[in-house]
Structure formats: C-alpha cells, structure tokens
Image (tube, rainbow, N blue to C red):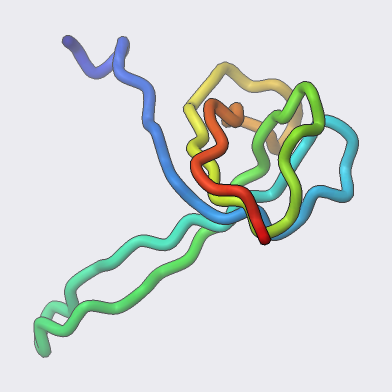
Length: 85
C-alpha cells in the first residue's frame, strides 16, 4: 500500500472531554537519546472527533487520521481500548 492510502493510527489517553463532539488525546512516544541511548518519553496532544460523545477523561482510545474536520481536528476516535475507572 502506498503512503497516500495509509492513515496514521495513534493510541493515547483522553485529557479533556469538555467540548461538544470533541476530545483532546495525549499520545506518549518513546524516543532514544542520541548520545546516552536512554529512552525519553515525549507527549503530544491531538484534538479528535467523537461524534457520539462516548469518551470521557481517562479513557484510553485509538485515533485515526482523517480529513480536516475543523481548524484543529485532524483525527477521529476509532475505538475505545479501555474505560476509565
């Protein structure tokens, strides 16, 4: 499959669900330090579309890249992996 047809799928934790039909997902990635070779956690936040308002703060979700939905939203919530307690 070519690069154009492949959509990024990321997994992260919801940090905000205060908007209507939108959530903010924090994705953690591990990168290796160039000199010391130790792994460092990097965090990035993505705004994702949640059309049914099913997600809540603390849930672990998978988000899939999509066409631009609004000024900041470029992802959709594809699945809820784990519910918050």
